[in-house]
Length: 447
Image (cartoon, rainbow, N blue to C red; front, side):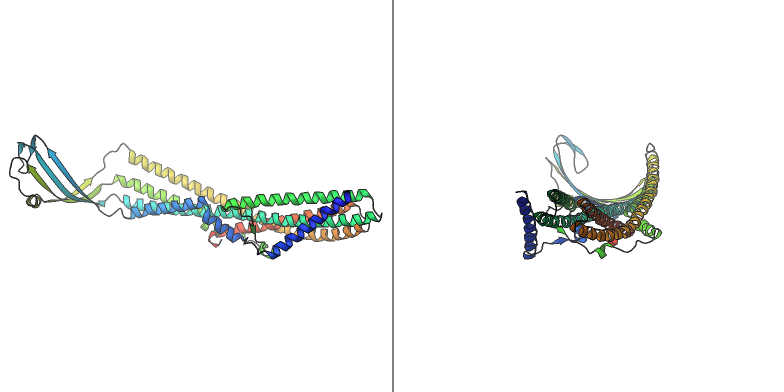
């Protein structure tokens, strides 16, 4: 009864694998996402990136406002007034009667000199635009790193799942072989039970790998802000594509990264903004000169007397004015002095943040470069380990089939091969990811 159930399980496994292969060849292949496609989709649909893009647009609107600040301000006004009792007439005399007055005017004001406040405010706004643009680049760079890491994790899960499925195939064949030997009385019932337990362990390992793959695929889709489709899968690159060239000298990478890293560029723009803010605050110490001009006319109507016509009054009461307004600051409770001090403190803070950003960049690149070199060395050593363990597993399998090796020796050789292949895959993906990061740090525009 036990062997019938065992044969049924093995038959079901074989048929499932066969129909999966048949259905995969009969139906049209589903779209496989490449790393570049995942990154592009994430950049287009990420809420954080889109919010920062709107912030950049908002700062550009502010910059446009400051660029037009030198233009004059022009406004028109109209009023209607009724007075009851003693009131002023159009003859500039007072009388006890009701009057009405209609006034129309057009005024304009233009700034001639404001201590260069408008100039420095425009520069400061332009620096703020640069800060937002670099913050946007930094957010994109962080998102690219996270998507690349999640993508490679899914890819590694797929490779580990293939290795586990291959182990199930090996154990299934060994189980069938031992059943045949048991019929002829060449092995004991215990050997078959032990091999069956090994097969069940391998199948459980496959289930665990599938669950891990589903979880990591979900994490990748969440980073991309993508609803997980039923046929979601990623493209498997060739192993030669993963083995990138050796990274450049670390000094060359740092020299390029300092000129392109968004965080450093953002801090430089913040320092420039602080310098312009200091100058803008100092402009409050200078006098301000404005030009004001306007035209206007009035219409008066007094009850009880003969009023002139509407058009006649508009022509006769038409007036024009022009004036220069000079404002000299004398004392404003030390507000200007304190604003200058605050701007200087802000500049000092930004300089410290710039130095910290450079130190953090140096530490990140040195660590990534060291990890890349270690991963490259691991690839070489684990490749040799895989080759030797493959030969050892082949010999152990032949000995096990001939009865010269125990099940423990067979499983131990199989586990060593599995661990070597897994370690090599992990080192390979780790090396590719570290090289990808170095390329991203060196020049984000190339990604």
